[in-house]
Image (cartoon, rainbow, N blue to C red; front, top):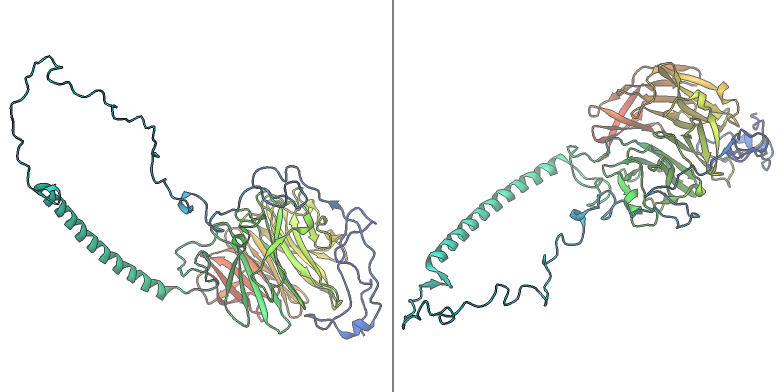
Length: 549
């Protein structure tokens, strides 16, 4: 019979008073067979259910960095004088993603009159001097005319001289003919273009014409930000319907969510930046911001969260707290007012950690690189207190990151954190294991891929598990576009020098993400593509379809 963990349940990633290094603990309650990957029933009969690990302290309480609120347009904490709002106006005056300016203003471009009328105009009746002198006043130099008759009036048509009338008539006729020809050519061209567009494109997602994700278009128009990252998460509701959400950044710098479920089987769009544009906390994401997301499926609670950074490299978050009933309702997640600052250009990784008790909703965890270089994990039990997971001496600057839950025997209470460390002029992709605490994590490091390029903006990691969390695939998109990785088959690690993308369009992948249920997403040639992992041969990804546009 299986035994309960050697330690009683404890509070997820809480802090301890025993050690200033601030180690984290995961919540472990005993099994609930309603949870995916449920543990054996024997575990529940093995021990006490109301005992918890004693808390630990945090290594560092991250305070507000110097100048975190300085400058125009920065975020204000709800408790900070001035209110919870950005100091700037909404990012886009006429809807998220559309730059402001005269061209998009509702006001007229010019006033009705360049000079308003005035009763005191300087241009009066005598503006040009006195009236002409009479003959007498001129000294009689020119005698008055004698009984001259007025010349006969010239013939007119409609008040115009005959010659002037016919000239105007000719000009008008020429203009009418030219206008008719132009309209005919234009209508013919429009009909041809409409027919071509209908044959070559299809719509998906929102019906909002202002939403670039909802317009019928081909990929000749770039709708995805050139430096956009991508992140994805999944969850399963009580009816067994699978839900997936993919996040990216569009050309207007907006955070876009594309969501799908196995019931409707269509992709729908939420423009998170547009949703928040008229609020007191409009989004201001860094162009090309790192992205991380995670989802909770602990019935009756179903949530999806996304994290990104602002121009001051402060982590921000949005949350859909009723993803089952109101999947298009999002709100600002304040992270309890915590100021979590990242290394400039640093990446993010996130996950939701389950509990095993019927009353526990688990914990949200975000991994990031601090400005001093260490990799930390912050969690929703105490957002303001982050714990060092990988010391600054063991990680490269701007390291890519990925995180995934991991088994300890029958219990899913460990974590794996994937990062990169420098080794001379090259890097090493490695994974570090969380085992009750991050203490001694430098002794629990497994190298995955050696001799890779040092971190770059285009270099990203992704990780997923399958076969009841027993097998793991690690993927690295390297600078230059090469995709390599490793595969843990439950017994040993196997190198994957390259992955095969079966069927689907030609790829030029610039960003990658994976969900915990072994789905792979990539930005390629101004599209977001979806693949499923071939679990019989994890070096293969099988094409599923286009997520966007």
